[in-house]
Image 1 (cartoon, rainbow over the protein chains, first blue to last red):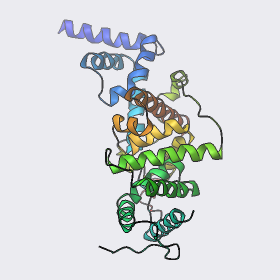
Image 2 (cartoon, rainbow over the protein chains, first blue to last red):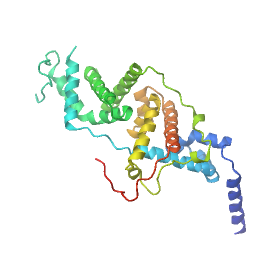
Image 3 (cartoon, rainbow over the protein chains, first blue to last red):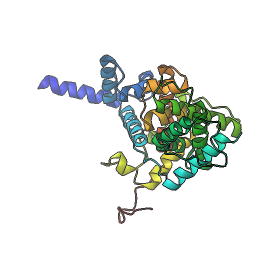
Length: 99
Length: 209
């Protein structure tokens, strides 16, 4: 018990004393797309996860990047009416046969 | 077999074999929604998007005989559309694409780490029912330099793999991933810098036609 509470205190202290903007934060910023796309090796992922646990700013940043990608993936497709579809086809064939 | 009629009989397909018309019609029917969607995502819902759709299918029509099926038809059409888009853009604006550097995406103040948008407990689809947010997202994507926008649209919106995007844009996978990362950071920063309010709680189910 004693060991665990000491460790928790140390982690909290690390989070409090970590100043965002260190070289580590910048290094991680470079890897974040690969991280959220699951393209990194286990060791690097683990290193990033450890850092995120200690740096709330980086953690927020990753969450916001994930949300951005999720939004992009879910933008609804525009509607094309049957009339527009036929009209465009006609214009294309007209242009194709005109010289 | 002869089930299609030329759109304009006065021009007549006299110098074109009937098969070309048939193939083109099939190609158009199967892919118009895909190319229309792609063009709209690249150009917004504008005349430019319509021009791009037409230019793409016109080039496809002309190249149909040379298409040997080495790539998927959709990949081939995406490639034609991407090239046409770059050409049209150059003709219209003539401005070179700006390079995005990672340094510009490092947040400098506390408010810049999160998105300033209402996201609590909502799925992305639910979030996008907020028209203001959808507009903000479209504006952010539209502000991207073209070559970054293309990668983001192909990868994150059209859902292609980095390898396919590379084949379409003539880039290696590493370059695709590097551009994608910068494009995502750019859009993230835009959404973080500009606040989007939550929709009125009194009228949560308001529909827009």
